[in-house]
Length: 371
Image (cartoon, rainbow, N blue to C red):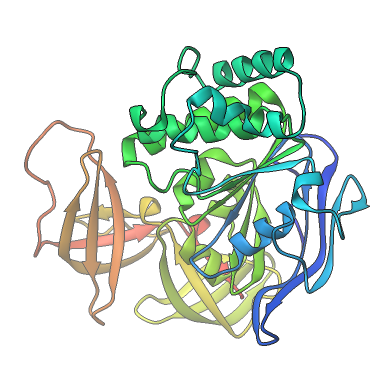
């Protein structure tokens, strides 16, 4: 597997190195399959993928809750083999928050310091500092049942940060929150990482969450890492069909390369005929032709030369407020999705089910997928 050359502006040397790590349960189920990647100091790194892809198992191996069946996890170049979770400079925030309901906010945050013997004065100072960081200053005397879900999540964050870890692991930390609060907490987590300057590693199945928060993202499928890159590179230049389909929305066609001339290839695409596209390394035989819905343009007249185009009928209109998703069905019965910005203030749609329209896009916006 090849990583992206840059790290999305995060800067710094690798703090965690994962080297050919596999995790096999019961001698038969491979949850993580030969993963190698570096996580750089000070960056916000995301492990993204569908349920069961191995991302949480990989996170738990970083924390020390699971032991690799094969391979090594290194911290600052030193193997973590045999180092128990409580001896690693790594803390984890769980999906369920795991705050103690019978303790005050202060005692929840102070718990880890007390059991490691930190004196009272330093404990008070560090707890107050941690609560201020997560914007819960003055909440120390409250009980968890007096807090909202977002506030309980902040308590869990403060409890992890108070021990001043080198790396903070976040396991689906926002999944229990409603959409608006989840969006606010995404911004808070980014601000928090920038404030404390430690490395954050988050596990999520939510692509929007990963794209909006992370400097780099590792997309996983069936225990393997399919691509590691920054958010914009993942979205605009996915390296295979799985990543293209999993990150955002995508219209995917199947085609066959029929010619190569200079920096262009000719591809025969069902329903589109022969199209000329920018050449892609190793593009031969069967390929995937993909285009994002927002790259499509809908016209009532033929868009003319220079664009890939077909004529179809509007089969569905999905209104989302700021945008509408328009589904166009071609002569072969294939539905293509176009994302249209709702710029004018109006209650009716300028496109209706049953309309016959031209759907087109610039060849430069087309992805040629060989994997």
